[in-house]
Amino acid sequence: MNEVLTLAVTTGEPAGVGPELCAALIDRTWPVRLVLVGDRDLIETRLRAAAAPRVLPDYVAGGEAIAGAIEILHVPLRAPATAGRLDAANGPYVLDTLDCAIAGCLSGEFAGMITAPVHKGVICDAGIPFTGHTEYLAEHTGTPRVVMMLAGGGLRVALATTHLPLRAVANALTPELLEETIRILDRDLRLRFGLAAPRILVAGLNPHAGESGHMGHEEIEVIVPVLERLRGEGFRLIGPLPADTLFVPHTLAQGDAVLAMYHDQGLPVLKHASFGGGVNVTLGLPIVRTSVDHGTALDLAGTGTADAGSLITAIELAIGMARAAKGCD
Image 1 (cartoon, rainbow, N blue to C red):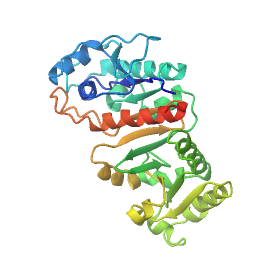
Image 2: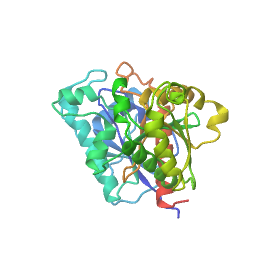
Image 3: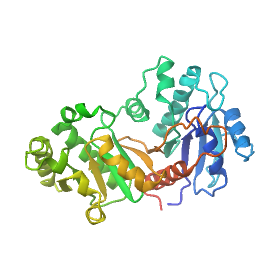
Image 4: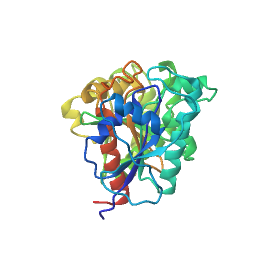
């Protein structure tokens, strides 16, 4: 199949760097059609500020998908936006862009979506409870369990738990959660990354993976029983491994992905390895979704100096995932 895919790019917090990162997309040759979801005037103002003035065509649903085309799906701001200055009045606007992209993905109009960074605090300041893209996408696609994975620097690191205080992690790490996480990770490595028999390196929770119970019992009581049960079903699982020795070349070469037990166990290593080019992937969704691995960078907004490396890599990864899911060449 040589189908030209259409992917949506939500432009994120209007006061942040998201809209202007789109300037870097214009100078590249893409094998897909990209649809920028956001306010037309905002996007074009930021393009001019980044010395990339250009009037982009409007996206027309059902129109021909031409490789290399970059179009705008106009979603109007709720209030004027100024680079670097957050305004809670535009909190609903950010969610409007996400809703458009999600609806297009669910209908098959878009083969996937890529998200520029949003500012959780300003959305909450608008009176809208919002904990992040991942949770919002799960709710609005009816997905009971999703898994956060970051890819970059030659690594794929998924998380069993995400944004929790460290003291809450051990209680959250139940056999049910761990099993569901591994099943989702294994399935999407097959479906979205084309790995026929993925190998997953599983970190322990405690130092030295608990050292036979002397430094914690979660490995003995939770992690090992789940791994043994799933190995009996044919899952290729290695661990639990001490996190301080898991991330060495010899061990990493034995796996296709790492499953860390909590946020700061695995992501600092990946972000060091990816040098700002990491990609956030939401696994378990019925749609393809990738994102940058950085925030809104308000201090850089409007200057034209923001690094678009993570956004570019996120689009490239989304293209590969969408093609794998559709069986495209």
